[in-house]
Length: 580
Ligand code: ZN
Ligand code: ZN
Image 1 (cartoon, rainbow, N blue to C red):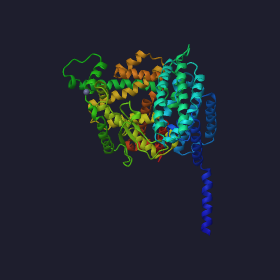
Image 2: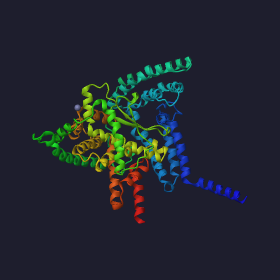
Image 3: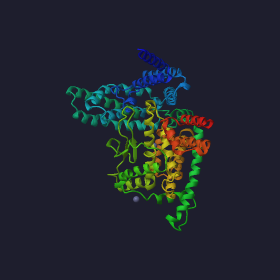
Image 4: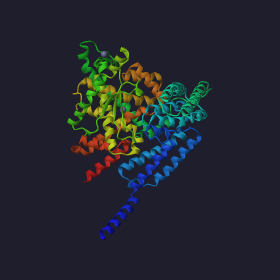
């Protein structure tokens, strides 16, 4: 009896403590935050595998913006009621990520206002296409939801027309092309899905009628855009004030835009110097006693072109990648760089059809609502490519670059980072993950592997690495230059072709990308720089005690959080150890 009473007293005490534990309270807050977030962002919810709101399309009118603003204000108040110092490290970063997200909702609606000037932000075909191609539920259930969602399409495009005031020329053209391109989802894909379904004939017919109305709305939107009397189009350049803020919200760096720009310029000069040394060293091997061009950049380019000729056969592109993964894992283990959990293998597969068209490789990880799924390494096939196009692609992804690509995408890059971030599961971090940390890690992994002797310090490998790294560096110079410094198309192309050794087609594509997007192109170099700087700082602090493997595992253990917060936490731990 005494024992029983003690047990009751103990468990009551435990419950009472539990209620006061700020972390438990914060966990509950996070749950409601996410559930409510999905309600006002149904498309975002579907894209991460939360399918409760699949039948809803958010109509982008003032009412919907007001709802989102009210949500942001309410949740910020709730958030501020927590004492940050009392939260666990995991919850501290979640707190920061949520705070940033809520402020960012406010800023995008009140200041950035791309809903007024970017007509390509309005396009329904993609989310409908995903409902047709992703097998998360039975076809009939997906089609039923799709039918309900279709009802909103005409109102969606009416709201779009109301919102648009001074669209940029570039985004208007993109909107026309992409919306027209999306019509086939309703006219073809949906039609064949309906043929395969077991839905009642009457429902099928209803869906067909609504799809017809959706197509009319899309075509009407396109015609409206084409006839728009846009006397004062906005410039596609974001402008310094907006850019600085967007960088703050999207990158969450410890550095400012100006600091990152300076660092990128300095890195470009450093890389050119290194490349010149290696190209000089390699010149006799590839050109014998031929005269070197007087212009160093031209000389480097000629050596790069020769080294690029070493590449795999088009038919063995996938096999070459498959063979490399275990070799990379072996190297990481032998050099004691990072522990890799052998129970979570990476599955290499041919790129599925719905992704086709983008050659190269990418990682698909299971979403936060589907943890048991496999992680895939999707490899594009070159079958059906004409000889010239395949050759040019293979020179770009030559023997050396292909290895760097695998390091970046798989081991110890994106895939390894994912395995670690899944070990500290936080649904907040998996939906609000920091892109600069994720990309920065993969870019850091490339240099780290070479520093540790991957590629046997062959001058060709280093030269190619520097070219590859130069791409991330010049993306940053380009993005900041174009959006805040009026960089012209001519000097942009010259930067990419002459100074970053890119092919014309690649450079043109990059110019197009920078005129349609902003800030994202900076994430690779910014994250890389920050991670590298944290490492060097800890090396200095810890001296002989610094262990690379420990650094990597601790760093990754914090999950996909902004580097500046990981840095603070790691420095705090290092300080404590110092004082012991
Ligand atoms: Zn060739
Ligand atoms: Zn990447």
